[in-house]
Image 1 (tube, rainbow, N blue to C red):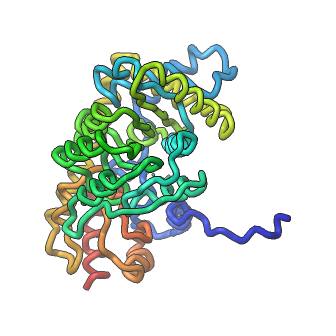
Image 2 (cartoon, rainbow, N blue to C red):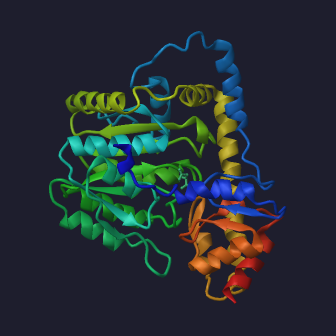
Image 3 (spheres, helix red, strand yellow):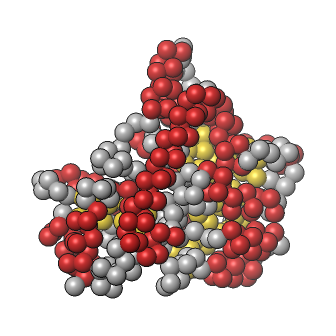
Length: 392
Ligand code: LMR
């Protein structure tokens, strides 16, 4: 029976982790998988997380099951950060904890399917796991263009999908720090998107995995909030993997926004049933840590300061690269300064990407995506020189 299975290649992005580790060159540069790095190239545990973990270790008196909803205190502590001061919108938003943002996306797609969605439109390029999740759930994933050649967001393509949409359609939208392009919709474009969605049957599914790493916690959630203020129904997939540095602890949340408070119970009970069938319960540790950190004033402030430091460093890398504009033939760098988050796409072909790896020990995704957090004061000039070499 199992002999019917064909080999499936490993996820190319995750495979880079191993390839990079196996490279013995000392000056190697990892611009692959999306993890934040300090200027020393490290991905340390946040001080706020360490403090919360210490408290958890002291105070946790049981590791008994919590149920498919996970840690509700975590889910609710996060809500004002995501949705603003009226976080429940009058009892119309609630959610549950998921294993990472991936679990939240999976749950959102599965709930959408249960509610009658048959296809989820995806702006491409997108996170390479989006379309596999949608098709694995059994839905179609038609695509539209996310960005224009000039490096701006192609809001018209999204608006067309929303305006032409029919019952049974959903659209997956990145809230901020678009992965892989770094190109976000402008505030004016979000106004138009929210307006178009308000009169469309298309269900918005908003993926917010990098809040705080773009322009600020509030700014990065502004588009999402505009949409939620206008639409009757929406699903939100949240990740704390990056903005709390909890990657391997898999910390995420799924939220549903409904038209009437009375509809929330059905949305959440379906989500809980799907969670139970998929993973039964989310891992507890990371969610408990985030709950503790957000509820304690001092830890919360430490977290906010750490997040600000990360954001400022990412902006430094972006502006440094932008200043190198013109030094690399055929690879414009100036627009990187206007983009957000961990990622940017460089117009490099497969041979150039292979040459960067083989000749310069620079590792990046085969799509041309770089994780800009992999660049530091110590390696950024080497990277620009390597780019210039492969583009010459
Ligand atoms: C990335 O895009 O690099 C991250 O979101 C990690 C992942 O799971 O792909």
